[in-house]
Length: 194
Image (cartoon, rainbow, N blue to C red):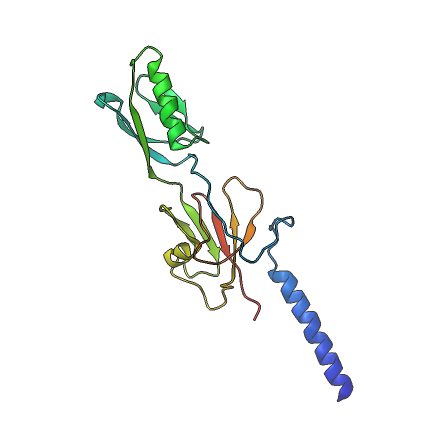
């Protein structure tokens, strides 16, 4: 009986070790550790492919309209043609368009731009409806989980893994109401161990 119990405990320890290794996220950046109280904030939004913007040139109805950032990172505008948009903030895009219009078209253009539709975000793992969802301003991880119809019963509700659209690795963050999501992010809700 004593040898059987020891063998059983050894088998359980091996099983938990294997199970733990199998569930560990494989693409997490090893240089970034989950720290208590760490909060993810999203920097000022930069445009990218699939974003839809509305450009308004005051007093010039023919130059006003809705434009989608193409795969090349540009938008095509009347008169001035293609303008680089990818990687720019909305303010930088306004300045770029105004500068292009000053090159022989309008003396003092007043340009206003706003994002109408952001790139979608993606959520996978232990949520009821994983998939692609439209981004909304000030989105948090908990809002994203609610959009995906909540956690499954196996979900780890203490941490979340997020991979930025331009990042190579996902990073672990505490799953709190302050953890923000950016357009194009891939969110993964892991499985809890116990």
